Amino acid sequence: MPISPYLLLPRAPYGRGLSAAASPAPSGSGEAAEAPVAEDAQLFAVPFAADLAPEVDLPLPAAALLAHYEAKGEAGEVVEVPVANGETVGRMLLYGIGDGSVGALRKAGAAVARRGKGRDAIRIVLPEGPVAAFVEGALLATYTFRIGEAKSPPVAVVEFVGDGVEAEVARGEVIAKAVSLARDLANMPSSVKTPAWLAERAAEQGVTAKVWDEEELRAGRFGGIVAVGQGSANPPRLIRLSYEPEGATGHVVLVGKGITYDTGGLSLKPTEGMKFMKTDMAGGAVVIAVLGALAALGVRVRVTGLIAAAENSFSGTAQRPSDVITQYGGRTVEVLNTDAEGRLVMADALAYADAELDPDVMVDIATLTGAIGIALGKDLGAVFASDDDLAAELAGAGESTGERLWRMPLIDDYAPALDSSVADLANIEVGSSYGAGSITAALFLREFTGKRPWAHLDIAGVGRSGVDEGILSKGATGYGVRLLLEWLSSR
Picture 1 (cartoon, rainbow, N blue to C red):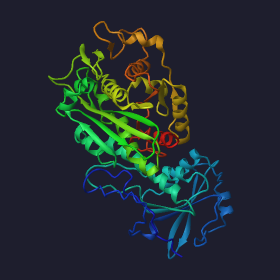
Picture 2: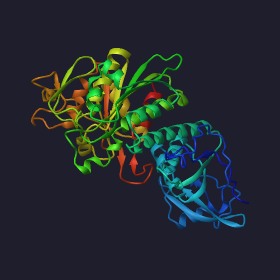
Picture 3: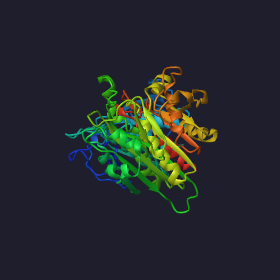
Picture 4: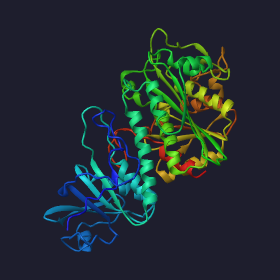
């Protein structure tokens, strides 16, 4: 009996590319999609412990096959065997789920989907347990990004089969689509991705949007955003996205760094350091993607997203080292290094949130310092926090989603590093007495939070991947989307 080509989830939304030829509109509906599927290109996947589908004829009993392949059932372990599929030969994947934990199922889903590369479709019998994590893993493993000529996706269609799991499958799809959106935004070349372009994409997320253009920023005295953006032909923007569910009692502000390209300004980066600077707005991309997913997940807390978007370039109008700028709210800052620009735009957004939005808590996310990648490598994000409970909540959300955080210290003894003789603050350490670049950057941001509960996520080390494995593809990772959605869903 042929394996049915019934399709539940279309592949299109996951890493859709952004050219007209390669950009089918995301369905977002979860409805069955009709598409021709070549029967000899299908894969059928079941967990080791599941009853195998009766319509599939295995060449040997399942137990004998698993013994032959010395399968242990570990998460990510996959055994592929040929099966009869009508008059053709199909392939069955027997996959392990390890201890059945959230992390194990996410890893298993990714492994199964990656084994489907080059096939038209893969049909997966879902395991028991936290199915949303399995779906996340499977869909994120199919992510691709390409501009121009359409590129065949790793798996054209993923179908999930299981009883009573529709809500979990839908949640996994919403989260995977949000992560993919963040990756798409960060992977887009900066020849397209101007601050204005980013604002347009943000306004498409189904929440209330307000955008300040360059004249409004100047009139509103957002001095940090104006100063960073003044050297570019592409003027800056401040983007505010508002999610206000009925009956919300709490209010969270998320602030994202939106530097759409970073040359370093007059403090010019070396060529190697500039190659990947199109992803310097990864924090802003995360905030946009999170705001777009909140309604679908039924998040109950009010959330405001602020994305401070600018292109840090060099020209005759660029800010200079030794300039003094006035941030939103009146604090003056001596700019000693124009390549420490992210903190300048984010300081404006944080000060605005404190003065005008009255949040209960503020969280910012940014590819802020190269130093954090040296300290924590490519697998751990950093969290600095003024509040112990907030730090614990975010770290817990990171553990459950696989986006792990390591708490870093906010050492008040290092605060003198930011003393300036001509302004309230310097944007980098004066001299080299302390040398803790990530800590002093966090201390700088703290100055603009009004002593509210606040956390800073430095994702410079984890915002980009150089490998294509598991749920990651080379390029932007979308790190922080799953973590923040989990944290906000639990509030």
